[in-house]
Length: 221
Ligand SMILES: [Fe+2]
Image (cartoon, rainbow, N blue to C red; front, side, top):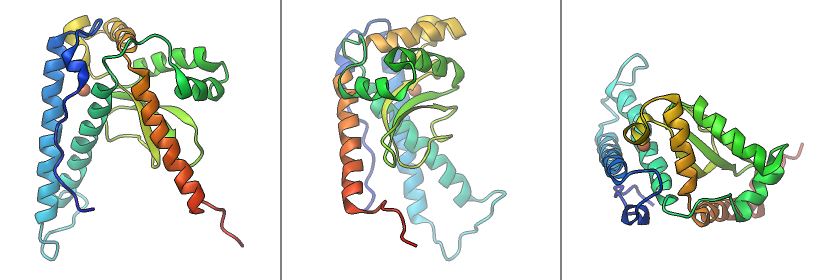
């Protein structure tokens, strides 16, 4: 299917008063998301319109290199916020369903250990913590990402996206490590675990499909 323009979506979280994340923060944050969609579209159009018989490929600097890299920043900025806004607006509480079940078996100390691990990861990251499902082995992992286009790995499907950039919390809590910790608690008070579990269901279905196709059978020697 050929590429088509990204369109910012509306999310139920914007029709609610969240617990500890102000409407103003959410509205300002949405403008960033719209900006990522706009710039991802702009980069992709430029990349589609280059004359590849003429354009320079240069590893030090070239327009092709610059736009290709910035495209990943814009595109993943769009995708991460799509998930972030999508799973806000819930009742929070403890993780539930399949997500909780998988985490409980993934971490040596079970779900309680994960709850501590994700909070520490949120303090250790400069941009995002993504809980991702690995399509190869079916495991869950907390990925620390300093920007949205750094340190994600192939075949990882994000199921939970925790934005720890200062724009997510500075207005409500101040741009300090303690402010970030308070924001992270607020984030978890507003999570819609059904949304997280829908993401996980899709990821598990994709893995099952790939497994059934035999695409990952070990090579015969
Ligand atoms: Fe953000």
